[in-house]
Image (cartoon, rainbow, N blue to C red; front, side, top):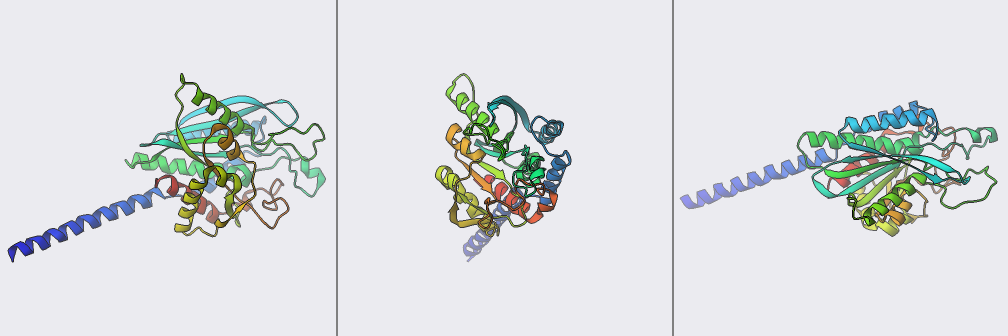
Length: 335
């Protein structure tokens, strides 16, 4: 009888320990998925306040300096990759990629990336005269950067609290939106979009082939592009499925589990989109997926205000930012 009581007490104690461990695990998972849409919105608003971040302008330079300062403020190891690529007109286009390493407790690293430049022309404006004005780029550029900055802030906070975080390589690509304008009548050249990611991918590939240089091993990448639209839908994009299907499935399953299935559409694969992830996949050899808003009911496949003067803060939505940011940080912290 006494032994039976002892055994029963022991079982109860083990169950209590198990429950405490489960609660601790649940708390940790909850902390790891923390994301503030308000903070991401503020990061986007701050970028837009500089004006259009067109390469070669003062606004572009000042915003770049601000991005570096924000990353350093959160303890990231920041480097700037500069160089040139041939643009649509056959000229050498200066490029300023901003990279940051967040050291975590696990390797290989995960790549989080977005472009930070703005398109110099509003190609899709109905008013012809406005087509030569630069795009403000609240959604097309600043939204992806804002979400990543908030993820960096959250990771820094978790690390300071002694939590385990993944190692993350951040890259803000320049000159993504410098592709051939519709008014150009000169010789058509290939690969005029995504110049910054082409430069970065080429240098990454070269460094992996050169044994004299240590290169950070990157497991996979997530590209964020146009992630602030109030009516955003993120289908599984063709190149993402071709090169990074397993990681696509993981992120989209995470979104569904978190209740964001209406944003992350799983039942179809949409057309191939030439975005930064294409060159990360094909040149750098890193499996990379693209979280990009795609519309079936517009002529361009994107929002009606894409590459127009209306790409401003009125089209940035807190609920969309929360869905994207929480899905991404939960995914990268749950491996």
